[in-house]
Length: 479
Image (cartoon, rainbow, N blue to C red; front, side):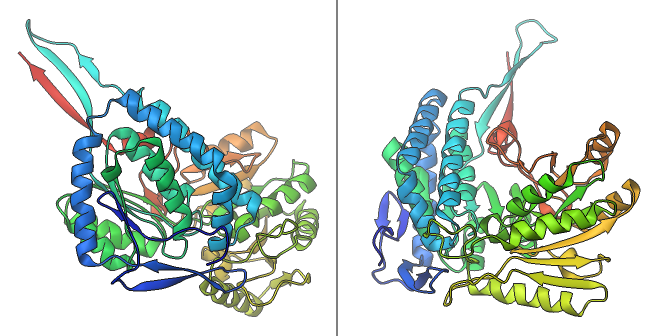
């Protein structure tokens, strides 16, 4: 195990469980393909034990006052900030993103815990006016119960931690399954929660074969709520499992965010900002700007500035301070990028341009790539690339571009750049997404809802809406 990695294991029933008598899988560094750890996988008995623990943890944690829960979550935020550099290194070793990006993820996670801790104290029911003397009517909010939560590998800390912070703020417990590719960084978050005072059985962490673990957890009568972040096909399976057992589910699924650049903006700085946003985490972000519709009048200037910025990025090991874009998280993504480029290269009217800067050998690296296309009938325009390939296409008018931008099943995030108030208002009213940034690439904050529409899922995380997803209203009529 390399220096400054972390101990891997399961956490259930208030106990850390190692690899003894359990199957294990390798955890690898995508920059070098070297094995950095052995992750134990939960047995069916482990999952049952985690479920029983979550039930016990719920009964204990739900009785903790909202003020005290909030204090614990805010203490968790403080610990995460204190440990940010160490945890960032674990993220980079596992997932590949640069150290500054990894540290930013930790700090955003800390902000999420702090927000959730504050919001825990602000949730309240309401008193209803009575139609009869001596009758008191009120609505109280209660925690939904133990939660089964599933996190992705691209934001191995922030994504599952957003679920954890909100469900704990609501008074719930959980069995959470982070991604097996990136386990260690989230385990550090769990350690921070426990050190801050979270009831030990309120949090349980298991790893294993994803569909087997998911079916086991969701079928259990102990689990009362499901939260999943991942791909659309898997999200459909999770929704079907939850529906079979009549359990509410929050789904944050894939995206293919359109970026609409109108001709009344200063196009060069927009293009530079777009390139930097697109290739953050090597493009492996569900809300990353990924389909660029640029008005014909400014298209060529946009392309020139975008490609110049993108192709100047230094690609390498995320631990290297000089690196500006790390590797893809695993070899599967390299295969997916090759397929998208091959399709684009054979498409009529499409041109593929790729950075010629050297990249290290031996890891899952891919150079920043731009696809110039006159048509949307190319795979990278229809399918979420989830990698460092940017398709750019021209458009002529507002009606046309909104129709094209809304043509896919995705509806997570969208971006637009325009000076005209009428144009901005039309985009805000008609672009079918759950999150929209206008004249900015800032799309997510702890206090704002995070979620999509259409095939990008339903339900939200973040803000008051995220916490509400783990609460159920109870009407009380007292005489």
